[in-house]
Image (tube, rainbow, N blue to C red; front, side):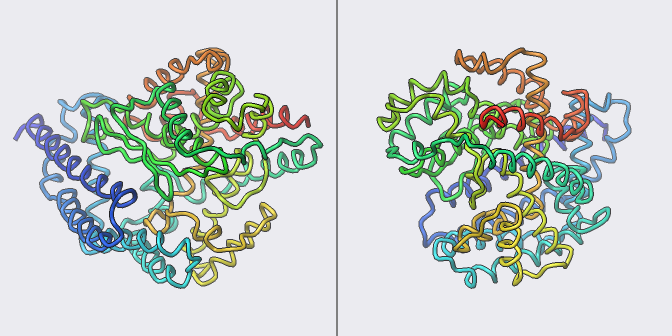
Length: 502
């Protein structure tokens, strides 16, 4: 068999597998949105059966045989060519998947599908006792997964590597420490300011229908293709890319609080723009796949915060907001802008402000890392969670549903996922600074409703690259620098010292 023939086989196999994975993502989206309560048990069986098929395809020995034919051949081309990138990533995925026993893959799929359903039931009831057995099973299976995958220094690295290629716990700890120190200093300055925003204007009446209509108009204006996507309501917002032409966003609404619905829409839209920006001709291959969750989060954070909370953004959208919401018609733009950028320690991660958000991530990172290192038991986790919130943010959740049980991630088996949120913030600030250097004053463009230049820049520099570069390599390729937390630190200090007058 020639290298060309082997590559064609790999290409067809990868695309067929991707179509089956699309069915799995569609089933997951449906479970979170419209599956009837009594259908969850069968959905778990469906997902387990599909996981078995996908695992069998991902570990098919013929993949290894075909890769051996292609690798090292003169036909393959330069390391950054489409073919070379696909072969490199197929090899990485194959080696990774063949380390995971089929039994473990199936058990994890079923345990996490059941775990999410149990979490949805248990969280509103503050039922930690009812949820803990499912979570204990998931953490146990995840430890097995880490051992099966192998790691450089510690089990957590194997889990983190699934979401952020090349990252390790010991790499992240000093980066997070630097950001934590800067965050605490800034927070102390802001809390000492006599200038405070009037956040009560965000807690008026905002009808859900008006929130949805305003959100859809914002999506269209910012560049999200609503003919290739949709918006639905869930308990915990997420984006699900099914495939080319089908990228689904979700949100949740609170008629008594503006931020909950709108900023989750814009956040998930950032993820959705990445999905819509992938080149459809590369669907089903690494070149048509997002490179990492940290890079994904850089896109959502860019649009939610660097764009969506800027004064230029609201100067453009303010007349529309006042048209949709009668409760804002007596509010000054500057007061509203200050309010949506209010800094105040809070319990809920997804509603946290830009300054304190990363402290929420550090708490989760530290707890799951301690659980994996054996320094903390699951029985001790709620108390450890509360202690860290008290130490870092000066608050404590009165109910566990707003404490350790607030996120869906662990019930979905996404252990090692949380650090990617802070990495996304770090990447976003560094990318945005580079975009401004190349495009000029972006906020002045936002004020005119001109969002296309930034979107086109990110499409060219990030989305269209697929998995051509690993995360830190892509960052260096776009900005000319390695990861530098000072970009985020400087952005936060510049913006919030001006708002708070400190």
